[in-house]
Length: 109
Image (cartoon, rainbow, N blue to C red; front, top):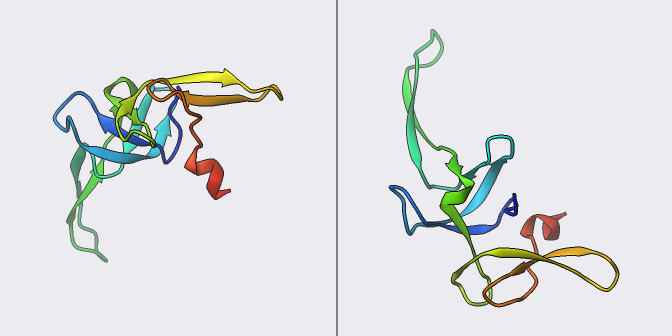
């Protein structure tokens, strides 16, 4: 999967088509991603002796093929490719602008 955590993506299919958000979770084995505030579902929590019952809204996973990366330089959706640098490192590039994509997850570490 070419998508990474905290990538800004746009939904290209489904009920939330056209909405933008960032990836908050990746499920690699199922080839799915969870995007912040996209594909929201309602989960009903049963009451207990200590807490009343409640309804919780949370984002459900989307298939990775239904989202596309937003190119940071052009602000349009783009496919992702890879390129090897002179030092042998492999980096992600945007196919639309042909520029290197820097992961925000890598920046935060």
